Length: 449
Image (cartoon, rainbow, N blue to C red; front, side, top):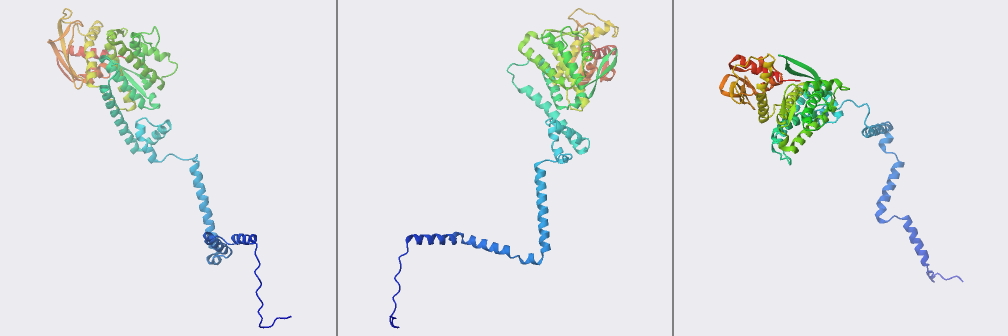
C-alpha cells in the first residue's frame, strides 16, 4: 500500500557506529591534514613547488641573463676553492718574504734570537735594503751596550754562594764579556780574518788568523794556568811553557782550521779555572805560573794577565766583525795597569842584558829607593806609578824621579799589547829622554802573540 501525501515517512533510525571505525577515520584525517603548527610550512612548500613549475617573468623574458649569472656563480665558486686550497697547502714556489716581515725580525736578529733560516733571510735582505741595514747596525750597537751594562751590573750585585776571589774577578768578567760577543755573532763571522799584533825585536809584527783561531790561541795559553792548578792542559803533558810556542804548535798540528766548535771548550775551561780558584781559596793565589823564557807570575797575577789578554783579543775580534766592545771597568783596568807597572823594572833589566836599554847609572841595595821615572796614566783606571830604572830590586821613589811621561789609560794598554809603537804612545814627556825611551820600549816589549 502506498502511503498518502499527508503521511510523513519517519527518518531511519541511526545505526550504531562501531568505535573502531571512528578511530580509523580519525587516523585518516591526521594523515591527510597537517597539524596547526605545520600548516604554514605546508603552504610554503606548496608555493615553492608552484614557483618551480612556473618560471619567473624575468627568467622567461631574458634567459641569456640567467645563463650569465649562472656562469658568474660558477667562476666565483672556483676562485673560492682555489683560495681554500692555497691556504691549506702553501705554494712551493713562493717568493721572498715581504719587507714588513723581514723588518719585524731585525730586533730578534740583533739579539741573535732568530733561527738559522730566519738569520739567512734577514742577512740577505740587509744586502739589498739600505734603511734596514742602518737600522740593524743601530740595533746591534744598542744590544751590545745594553748587554755589557747589564752584565757589569749583575756581576756587581749578584751575591754568590761561593764567592769568586777578588783577584780573579777581572778574568771572570772579561771572559764573560767575550763569551757574550761570541754568542752574538753568526757562523760565518767565526771565519772573519783577524790580525794579531805585537812588538818584537824593536819592531811591530803581526800574524793573520780568524775569530776561531783567536779563541783557540786564548784557550791554549790559558792552559798554562790550568796546568798550575792541576787541571788538564789542552795541549797535553809535556807541552812547552812559552805562549808563542804553544800557539804555533797547536795551530800547526791541528787537523783542520779552527771553527765555531772551539767556543764551548774555551768557555768550559774558563769556568773550570774560576770554579777551582773559588773552591781552593787563598792557598792558590801564590802558585807560580811559568811563561817560559818570559817570566813567571804568581797565580793571582797570571789570571790578571789572562784577563788583559782576553780584553785585548776581544777587541781584535770586535773590530773584525764590527761589534761594539768597551774597555774593562775602571777598577779592573786599574789592576791591569798596575800589573804592567810592577813588571816594567824587570822588563827594563832584560832589555839591558840584551843591549837594548841604557846602562844602569846608580845601583842601590835591594829595597832602597832608586832612580825612577814617574808614569802618569790618565782616565778611568789610571793613576801614578814610579818605575825603578836601574834595578828590579830597587824601589821607585818620587824623591829620585828623573822624568815623567803621561799617557791615556787605554793608550798605555795598547802599548803594552803591542798595538802601538813607543813613538806613537807618549802624549806628554818631561825630563830624562833616555829614561822615558827605556820605559816605553820596555812596555812594548812585554807584548807577545
